[in-house]
Amino acid sequence: MSALVQYLITGISQGFLLALLATGFVVIYRVTKVVNFAQGAFVVFGGFITYSLLGAGVPQGVSEVLAVLASAAIGLVFGAVTILGKMTPTASLITTIGLAILSEAVAMLVWGTVPLTFSGLSGHDLHIAGIFVQPQYLLLIGASIVVLLVLWLVLERTYVGKGMTACASNPYAARLSGINVKAMGLLSFAIGGALGGVGGVLITPLFPITYDSDVNLAILGFAAAIVGWLTNPGLALAGGLAFGVSEELVAGYWSDANQTAVALALMIVLLLWQSHRRQQVEKLV
Amino acid sequence: MVLSPAASGPPAGDGTGEHTPLLSVDRLVVRYGAAVALDDVSLEVGRGEMVALIGANGAGKTTLLNTLSGIITASSGAISCRGRLAHVPEGRELFPDLCVDDNLRLGAWKAASRDPADVYELFPKLRDLARRRAGYLSGGEQQMVAIGRALMAKPDLLAIDELSQGLAPNVVQEIGRYLVRLNADAGLSVLLVEQNARLALELCSRAYVLETGRIAAEGPSSHLKEQPAVQRAYLGGHVAT
Image (cartoon, rainbow over all chains, first blue to last red; front, side, top):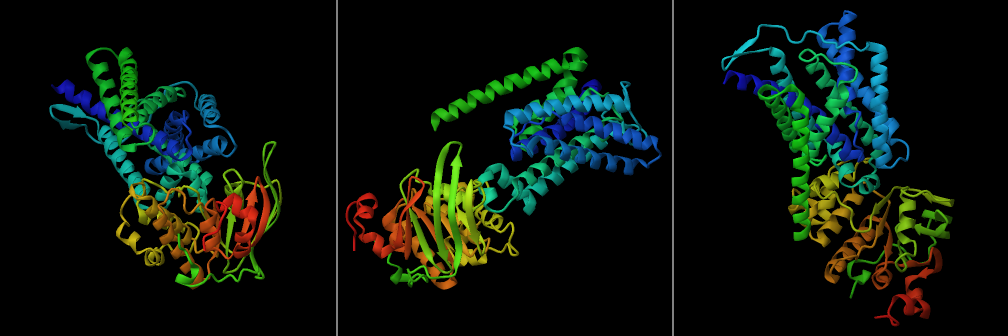
């Protein structure tokens, strides 16, 4: 029983990391129609930049905030490369893969190939349902909930958020209304970068990251985003949690080596089910 | 169909075109690759004038409006607008998942005020629908939202693409009355792009006829209605009086 609780807590925290990534995919895709496969790189940069700033003696909180801002700025640059030209969505997608590879090369040059980590939230492990839990797990869960809640409020309740929704819904009408659709696209990339950065800051104390950690993260984050058809942040959150928990359960009760494979198999089943459902709806219409 | 401007007050334009042009388009050419969509198009809209642009499908009407709005870049020619232009696109093009109030407020993206009170005053029906998603409205209600959203930009010139498309005649008549009132009361200039020539010529004091990207005829609506070629092509061979 205590093992199950352990797997669930670890899985939910992993799930929120994936939810941050998936929400980044969704925010960017809704506004720009670009699937940003460089999303995992933001996590890596977030973690590595925090590590370097801490090494330079910058206080922890300041380092983490700066790392998130830097990830947002990197997102902005990726957005500029991807959407400011006149690329098709397919060409943009390939460009994001190129940016992910470039990011790995830069991360390897700057931070090397050794896994890096830093101390997270200090304090004694908490005793929950018969097991000891590192406070950092709870911080990851709590901070992710706060970040996703703030993002939801921004998108649903602010004028700029509604402008982003307008761009996602009807870019032509948005342009006619005077909204700068490209600027909104850049903003969405910055938000995607910041979400990844938050993920990197929160996960690196729990799981050391390397320059190529982005690939696995991007694939799983994309899988979670697909649950919401790349457009529904709520379903993407559910997808992230489902993948995170299922990965941990597979790793705990079966084998570490199979956890990603099982999560991806789950994604394929979900895609087939959604495709079947969509076909049924189209028949009705 | 009866849409006499006299019923709601006459349009401010006098049909002569002798106004300070609010909008002036000079020898505009737009190409899509090798195809010429607009060829040497020139037109003017005066302050407080209601001008129609009529033509068949594919004549280049929507291309012209999209060029005026900056969505399409002209190959050559000049556009001069001495005021704010707002564009009501063909098919309404609302934000279907946002409510009516949000749709209206987004029209004021570059305006100083985002309060839609004036639009609700013009279209009282929309006040009751303010929280309803735009995608769930009837065609006529959506057209009111589309016009209201454009009005939120506080334009001097309202360019409307296919006002009557997909709407019942009584709804078109109702919305047409609103436009005439706006023109008469607020001095708003209107460029009405329509396939329904009868409607356009009834509402507007002056008109242009666009055929395969070129201006084929222009003048006061009353004169155009009498031209046999216009009657044959756009008015079913006769004019209702």
